[in-house]
View 1 (cartoon, rainbow, N blue to C red):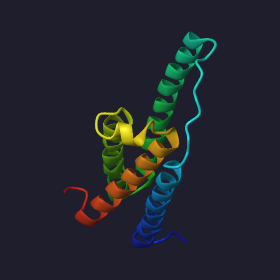
View 2 (tube, rainbow, N blue to C red; view 1 turned 90 degrees about the vertical axis):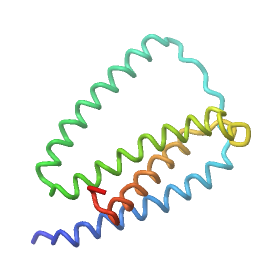
View 3 (cartoon, rainbow, N blue to C red; view 1 turned 180 degrees about the vertical axis):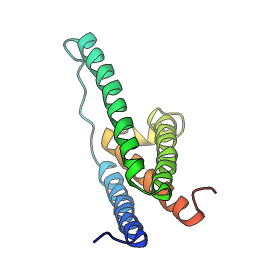
View 4 (cartoon, rainbow, N blue to C red; view 1 turned 90 degrees about the horizontal axis):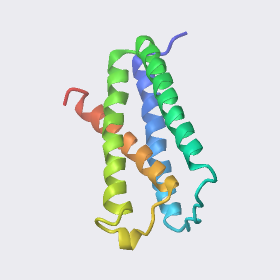
Length: 139
């Protein structure tokens, strides 16, 4: 028996609520973690080629899967999740530029770990989701 649209959105609300809580915990825990030194790869050109190829392949795969998801979900839910992702990506980039690169509080923060950036990405995506959920997707 299919669930009602309100129940589906409630389940999504619960998921994004847990994502905000998880990202806050991750940021709190990561603020105490030391970042180990990263050594250069033995074959940097190979690593670059594999990284670039994987980025394009995964981007194309996700594009195809997102199109499939859009056809299977209602327009409101898809727009809500998409708009929230548009909030999350620039927020994460700006956070990294302002705090991780030393432009603002880099001396206080030190280097920001990848896990802390994941937490910012998840938290800002969930914040964008709830912002659009309250205001509407056309706001």
